Length: 287
Image 1: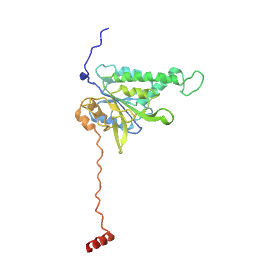
Image 2: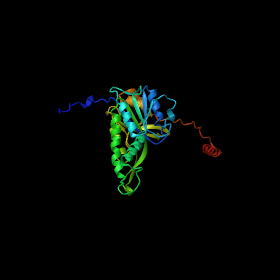
Image 3: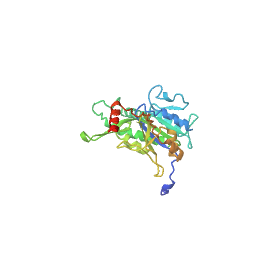
Image 4: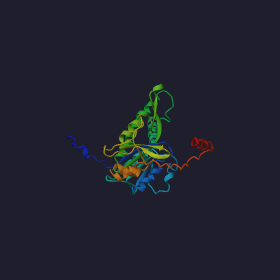
């Protein structure tokens, strides 16, 4: 077997952007998909959420192709079809240059169900001899790794959307709580964010939606970029600009920066002199 060929760090260029965004429900993760269309991309949605509308009502005014996935067998078929072309992603005649998984938390439910099926269980919490709930949480991370490997190897940009949830570390007075992506088990929420080039956290700042690109405490957020190209801590919720900025577009990087709203202070009239103050002023003059 020959030695791997060496390369130089200065020659590293990412061909595609990979992004994980997690936030509270109703922050606007799905609605921001419209920014991809506005920026000239051809998005496709890998839909793993539940319900007949699959949580896509906010973009029902757009004509975006949606690929529904409800179980692991369907996921494997879809992965194979998405990889059929080497140079681009195409699904049933639709060209896709940004694949949006809405949501990764939905994939977590699929991994959990696949684990239950593999164990022959109906639910995790059933207590009887030989039924150790910890076994399923050893199975699920591998399904998460398989999913990420399949998605990250596609020749297109990738955006993963996830809900937030609370994680805990320690006990008693030393216990710490912090926000992580909503995924099954304790391992994946910590491990999975490290596989992507960008992890951003959606929050409300002074009444406005922003994407946070820097960690706060144990809350994970960050974008891989050289020191000479730093992203603002708070950015506009615009996936299209984010991808362009990650691909080296300086104009997009500048446009992505969140600008706080200008607070206009109303004109306050000068206070009118009271009768008491007038008398004081007159007395002072007489003196």
